[in-house]
Length: 102
Image 1: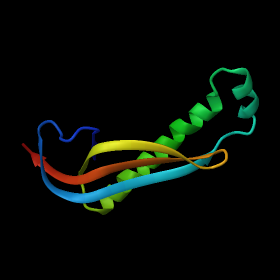
Image 2 (image 1 turned 180 degrees about the vertical axis):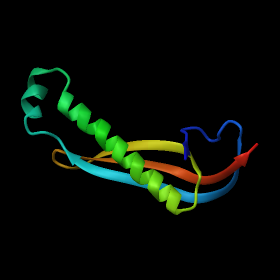
Image 3 (image 1 turned 30 degrees about the vertical axis):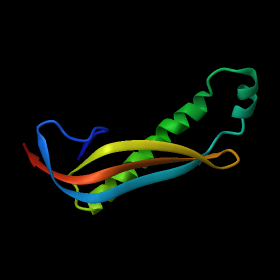
């Protein structure tokens, strides 16, 4: 599946819009990160957790796009929000489309 943050895919023509595809995950940060946040520096375990969470949200979004019958997605966006104390949601959303060679 082709995935892009732009409105179009080079060399492809969008033939149908299948709908909005989303994928999300909610993660909590490591309790041990609290001390590090007081003294400064990168929270490496939290950074690694966010990389993993983005990958999972992207995978879930891609699966939903495929369920909609899409072969590509355009206008991919990520959003993060705090859903509870110490917990964040990572959301990937996009427009699922079918394409053909231009």
